[in-house]
Structure formats: structure tokens, C-alpha cells
Amino acid sequence: MTLPAENFSDSLLLKSIEPVLPVDRSPGLGCIGAGFIMADCQLVAYRQHGLNPVAITSRTRATAENVAARHKIKAVCDSVEAVVRHPEVEVLDIAVPPDCQLDVIRRALTSSDRLRGILAQKPLGVDYREALEIVRMCEDAGVVLAVNQNMRFDQSVRACRTLLDHEVLGKPVLATIDMRAIPHWMPWQERQGWVTLRIMSIHHLDTLRYWLGEPDRIFASVAPDPRTSQKFEHEDGIALYILEFPDDVRASSWDDVWTGPAREGSAADIGIRWRVEGADGIARGTIGWPSYPERTPSTLEYSTRKDQGQWHSPKWDQVWFPDAFIGPMAELLCALEEDREPTISGRQNLPTMALVDAAYRSAEEHRAINPREIMDEV
Image 1 (tube, one colour):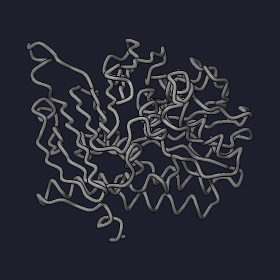
Image 2 (cartoon, rainbow, N blue to C red):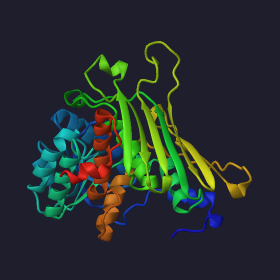
Image 3 (cartoon, rainbow, N blue to C red):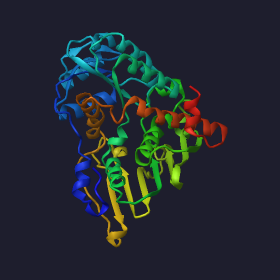
Image 4 (cartoon, rainbow, N blue to C red):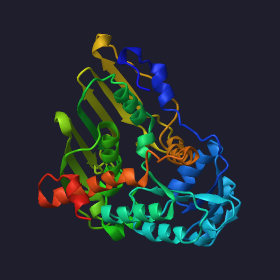
């Protein structure tokens, strides 16, 4: 229930960022993939909150065995099919490269009639067309699909959504995200030629949708990242884009993975800052993940007209990596428990996938693109 802004409090905001957990945490989780996201983020968060991973497989058995021993997972399997057929597995956690997801999900759906849910990594496949195929496959099989758009569960992102839900900031006017960070690129990106838009910007595009709703159009401009260009050819290293929403609401993000020669000898200025301005107030914050593995909580400050310029600065100890990774799986389990669609369902994620494709098209054709243009072509 939304409370009037005058009844809002910092304690309510802090409560809103706590993960909502299922009553029953016993459903067996089958893990497909044993890389960094699975081993160092998801399984850490699952064990912290009493979830029940029971089986795991990976491209190499030795990797799966190491992760299983670290997280006390009983069964190490040699295939996707073996995980799905494990007698305790009810829900799959799929953490494989995007160009492998369609095949893995198809194999999983045809290997068991007991499977209830799937949590798949973002991006959901290689493009909107493939994401739609995955969504339809899961719907036809009666399996609930959720997408691990985990930035939605970063504590400052959720706190900002709470401010917007309770109209503390009034009608939104402008939202911006400024990322100056050097990610750890995955080897599989080289074979696809992706750098920023589909891997990093997808977080920001989805967050802007989460905060503001569906945009009417996007205008994007990209350039290669000089550092990554030495490793493999790509176009979308540095990505700049503007979103136009209904009612004159605007948003933009500058996704800079070069950040100057910070690894080549200059001083470094690395971080992610965001800001949301409304008719009645302003919120600003930082995202802590660029400091990983150092535990650096994201931050939020906000002020409203009724506070005569006072800044509110609620604090928390949780961090995005790994603490917030409980959020997507918990949301899927709660949805299964309550017989409802997850807020991060595959179908709800399709507009994010369309928006990413629209950004690529905009950059290529030098024009603003309505995401509906992408969706109507399929």
C-alpha cells in the first residue's frame, strides 16, 4: 500500500530494501554453471538465507566439484539433463553465456515434467527475438521463468523505487546514471563482439524502466573502448543514450568503461553515480559494486520541498555483490509459493531486451528508435 508522502519515514525506506523471502525455503535448486556469478554471488546469498541448492553441473566437472564442495552441494552432475532429473530439483538456476541459454533451457524443459521454475541470467538470450522464443517455450511447458536483472535488487535502486512509489519526490522529471567503471569482461564476449550495451547498459536500461516505466524512444551513440579494442573487435565500448518517456520525463546514462587510462598509469576516478529529480524532491546515490571484492554499500540521499533543504541519508550494511543476489531467486520462489507472475518474469523482461536492441539500432542508424519497432517485427 502506498502511503502519502507526509507519512513517509526512513525506517519505512530501510524496511523496503530487505529481501522478501519465501515461507518454504526447501525446494531443491539445480545449478547450471559454476562461474563467478554462481559461485561467488548467487550461492553465497542462497546459503546466507537458507535456500536449498542440491545439484550442480558445469562445462568442466572439476569446476563443478570445487564449487559444490565450497557450498556443500550434494550432487555433481555431468549434464543439464542429469541436474533436471535429480529427484530433489524443482527450480533451475541457469548461469551460462547468453548464446547458450536457448539450448540449455530447451534441454531442461524436455528433460523433466517436475520442473516448476527457472531463473535465467540476463541478457535473456542474444536478442529480443531469442528472448521471446525462450519465454514462449517456458509458457508452453507451464514453467515459470524469471530473469536475473539483479541491479533491481541493489539496495539504493530499490530505495529510490520506494521514494517514487510513495511519491516522496513528486512527479519524476529527470533521471541520470553516470558509470565510470572498468568491468571484468567474459571470454565469451569476444565471440559475440559485445562489450557494454548488452552486458552493462542492460542493467541501467532495466533500472530506468523499473523507476520510470516504458520509454517511448531511445537515442544511443557508441564508440569502441580503446582498452578492450586491443583484445577483440567491438563497437559498443563507450555507450551514451537518452530515453524519452511519456509526460516529458527524460533519462540518460553515460556508460564509460574506458574511464581514462586508469590501468595505464593515470589517476583513477572510478564509480557509479545516479540521480533522480522530481517536482517535489531530489534523490542521488552511488552504486558500490566497482569496489568489489571490498564490501562497499551503495548509498542514497534525498531531500524534498517540505524539508527546507535537509538531506536524509539512510544507511545500510548490505551490498549488491553478493547480498542482493538473494532477491531474484527469492522473488521467483515467492511467486511459485503464491501462484503469481514474478515481478522479474521473462515476459516482463521482454521490453528490456527490446530496449537494448533498440539502442544498437539507434547507434547504427543514427536515429531515435521506439522499442515497439523491435517488438512488432517478431
